[in-house]
Every structure is written in structure tokens, then in C-alpha cells.
Image (tube, rainbow, N blue to C red; front, side, top):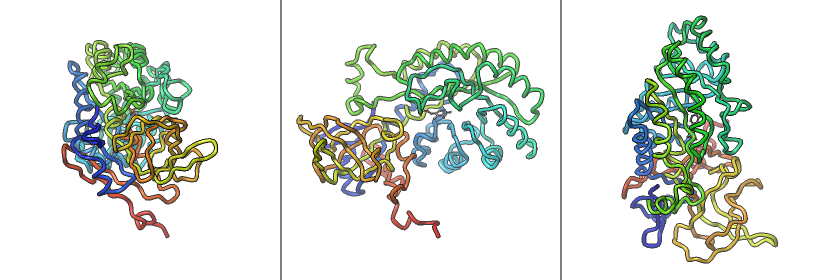
Length: 428
Ligand SMILES: *Cc1c(COP(=O)(O)O)cnc(C)c1O
């Protein structure tokens, strides 16, 4: 569910009219619903009630300071993938002692910074990294808290670019090699304290099956690691999928209620119900690392139609946002529902919605039946709260869009639109 819906013929975010926002702040414009972010966070937190747990929000999904502050204020932990993300979390008031640090390529600088800030765990992705972590910690006279990421070799059945839990992916350490690695670390690496085990099998998983499969497969291993090495936590990762196809409709409870059990996409409650019984008697703290599930449906990208171009084969609606603002369609074949901000009638036309960038991959949809919106009208690309702005670039020397956070009837600019001067700042 989420906070975007038509009211009086105009798309709103909570109680804010998006047409009015565009009048004031222009396009392209990212708009996030604080209520939706907190709702998702709270639902997931409640879904794990009954076992000691932490919800460590995956910062890379949307790292705006105000989004992080909102979550920090409500007790979230954070999963980071760089020193830069740790810096953001700290600036937003997050507690490093509740941060886990993932990623296959941590640098010495990043390791030192995170050690000195006192993070909860380095989630290590190779034997080589574990050795290096031990060396850096030793040189600083410190002990590094760590967990190894196990690659459980299960198929997440998601897009190949966001599948991470198969042996052929670059992530984690083979399931079969973990026991040996923990045993060797206990003997040979005095500056590392292995306090947990981590896994993350992929992103945008819309079925519970791969999660269950991975948890079942790894359970004997965590039990053994707890017995042999006294580990205290198990992070089961993120990856919970969201609704992209019927994004607008999925904002309301009615839509979810109208679906049969079989047709209903994975809910946070269902995730908890399926996994909780398998986790609650392990005597371990369970960490979750959701990114998309918290913020994905809590954001939209607003963009104005500039031109309609009728070619011999196709009709193109050319808009003022491009793949530099939202790259998911180009990078992952990601689908974003497109709805006009002004509530449309029922007439539809088949069009491509494309951006202004000099790349054929710069499209938001192809051959899709859409309301016949016209130049001057604003449309919303739904479900753009995760992996949207964070992946934006200045390609084609286009300034970053602004970001707005809505809370009830209040809309706050949480990132100013870049100016042309910002664009060349730091260049000689
Ligand atoms: C990206 C990532 C996540 C978050 O994935 P979502 O699909 O956004 O929930 C969690 N853990 C790790 C290690 C990641 O790399």
C-alpha cells in the first residue's frame, strides 16, 4: 500500500496535490511519502515480532538524508555498502553501532573509517577480504566485528542483473566453504571477531519460495556456527519485491483484498508468517536488510511531456526526464507504471514514452497503451522510490532533479534541484 491516489481529479501524495507541487518546483521531480516509508518499515518490524530482530534498511535504495533521518528516528538499523553511505547515516543521526557493511570491494579507507566509527558488523564477501580486514584491524590495534556472506546457491528467479545468490554470482562465499573458513579464522585471524552469518539472494523477489528455500538450506549451518563459534546474529538479507505493474491501484487496501491468495503479490506479513516459525527458536538475533520494500512504492518521478512525435511506425511521447534521472528501465528492463497527474478519461493510445537523452535505451516504456496525455501535461512514473534518484547521473550535462518529502499536508524540499553552476563545480 502507499500514499498516492487521485483526489478530486488530481494525483496526490498523502494530502499534497502533485500538480501544485510541480507548479512550485518544476520537473523532473522526485516525490516521496513519509507515511508510506514508515508504514512499510513498521509492517516489516511487526512481521518479525516474536524473535529478536533488527530491520537494517539498505541505504543504497534511497539514501536521501531526510529519508535516513526518518527511519533513524523510528529505530531502524542500516545496511551500508560504502564509506559514503556510513557518512550519510551518521549525518542523519543513525547509530554506527547498528550498521552492517556489505559489498565485495571495501577499500582500506572504508574499513578504517567504519572500524573507528564502531559499526556492528563487516559483512565480508571473501576469504581474502576477511584476511585483509584482520590485517587492517590489527594495525589499528582493534578487533573487527564480522560476518561472512554465504552464497546459498538458490535461484531467486528474478532479473539476472539483480540475482545474487547463485554460485556464478560474484557475491558471498560458497556454502560448502563456510565452516572451514570460520574454523581457520578462529585460529589464524586474531583481529577479527566473527559474530554472525549473512546472506542475500537477490532483489525484487515476488515469491516467498526462494526465501524459504534459502533459510531452510542455511539453518543447519548457522546452528553449527553458533555451537562452534558462538555467533550471535543471522542476517537473512533483503530482496522483498514490490508491485510495479499495478502500482497505483496497489495503493489501496481494497486492491489487496480483491486478490485471491494465489494472485496476491508477496506481502510483508506473509514474509514474516512464512519465516518466523523457522527462525524463532535458533537463539540468534535476526537481521533483515530491506531496501526496495521500504521505499520503492513510496516514491514517484514526475515529468512533463514536451512533445508528441508521430513517426511512421510509432508515436513517441517525449518527456523531460531521462534515463539519467531514472535508469531502471534501461538497466534492468524495469517496469514503471505511467499515470497522468490529471486524472484521465478512458481513451488509450499505444505509445513509447521516451526521454531527451541521446541513447536508444532512453525510454520509460515501449508500445504501451496509455492515456493520451499531451505536451504540457505532467505524468508520474510510479514506484520510483527505490533505485531511482540514487542511480541518477549528470549524463548529457543534465542537472539532478529535486527531491521532495511529503508528510501529511506538508511538502519539504529535501534536495534542491542542481543548478548549472553545481554541474561544473570542482572542474578546472
Ligand atoms: C542491495 C542489497 C540489499 C537490499 O536489497 P532490496 O532488494 O532493495 O531489498 C540488502 N542486502 C544487500 C547485501 C544488498 O546488496
